[in-house]
Image (cartoon, rainbow, N blue to C red; front, side, top):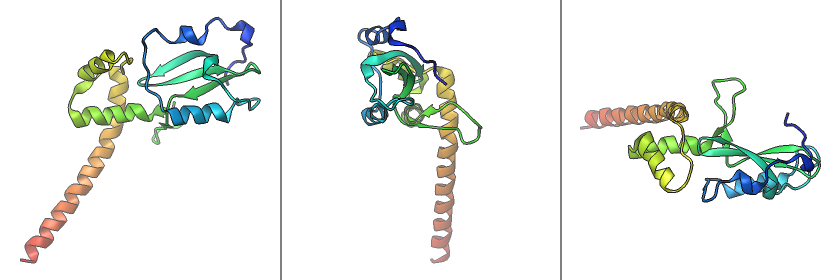
Length: 163
């Protein structure tokens, strides 16, 4: 459960949460949907200007927004999923899994990807986070590859018998 903080207790403002020139990746639809859904305690609409802190999770992040009632609300920067093989895990941001797929697909690697993100003033993704996501997506890639190979072998076998 998130702590209840009164607005008079705030030490930081939304201007001090973000670094000058800092850019972040977020899904506008997801953020606006969560803000409109309102406070978990009183239901009031939340405002991004009431952000008091943020927690980076690779390329995704949580924004902690203080409601008028004093309740702290965690707003996700985008869609998330959970590790089905583990019980009660932190949400995994889809953007991190998509980054792992892109790195695998383009062959850039972690270092070049983080250099690219740094040139855009977007905080990078740690090697350990990326390794976890690469492990996650490699299972899916292997499954699709195996299915495709099995289909191709079956088609080849059928074609050779029909000649």
